[in-house]
Image (cartoon, rainbow, N blue to C red; front, side):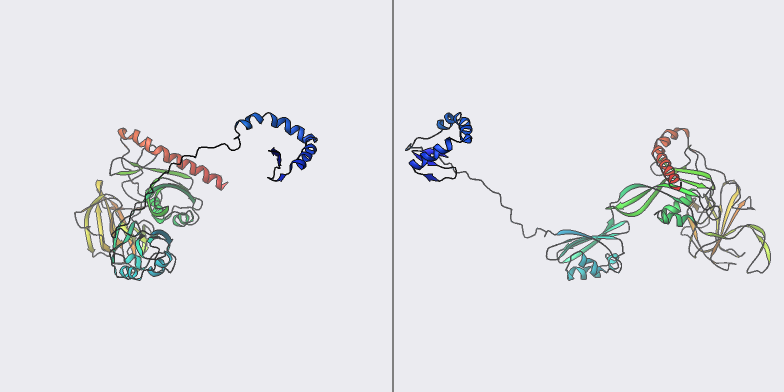
Length: 450
């Protein structure tokens, strides 16, 4: 409280008269709290009174200065400016149609649906594949402005142009990632790769890489292990396709095989052991990527069609009709076409140093395979069939040296030349990180087995 002109003003803004005020002051002044508060307040009285204003003092009016702030208004949109919408992404579900997919993307545009159904370039959208993703730009009214759908390694783009929809397909911008996996063989290479989440493309590359050392038709054993470092290409974190195997190791019946990929120029590369020896032999062990042996190399076998015992101087690989047949080595086509000795459609390749390989019972020859044409190891030269003296689809494969039959599974195959000395430094620098990854995979896998 305070006293102004003989009137007591309380802390709550109330007033009391002079006589009543004196009595109130005497009561308050006698309290211990008042004396403590007064000691603190008296030191500030001079400051307070210095800023006080005497009664009836005339003050100058405050000068007011108007301030103007210009606010920029959004420019009016020209009539031809595209309408903006919002983007939404959905994954294709099992049983989805183009109409249901567009509806879940938020589109309510019968005209756009009609254009897409009638567009041949958009035929991949007519039956969208479950698991793939689709993104669409939709207006608040549900009009479709743009649609993106990944079709394999390509991106299908549908854009509104005037009253219609234009559709184009272009390669998707994929992100490369390096992944690592390891697995143990229980029944087969492909079942182990499936259990590890590896694609068939990577499993096939593994079989190709080690095919000159391991016969995947008969050499695999339960408990064999493999580790692989490989490329995988993604579209917005979604795996699209497998790339190249960068490094791999395979433990077969306790024996360790290792291979690393080395790019030795802008266009070519190959697989080598860590010490620089090429793992590529002059010939592959098998002309098929993966199959089973239905009949082996023997001097006496009962022929199911001729009904007599005779030598079988080759290996029969049972495989589905149309399976690709690979050239087991670089060479020149010596003959290609129908053979009247029971081989049916036959391709004979001539290699260096008197080697020849024979491929019989083919359903068809690959394009460009004719007498005198040059083929490379691993190149497709034909397709499995049952032509000639054959009871079912299979490949009859022969391996000859100076026209003498050899058992393809037992013949000693010469190796390709090693890396040159000038390439060794670049090779060692390139393979160091992938070898470290293989070592990490091996230790992790062994720890898991313990």
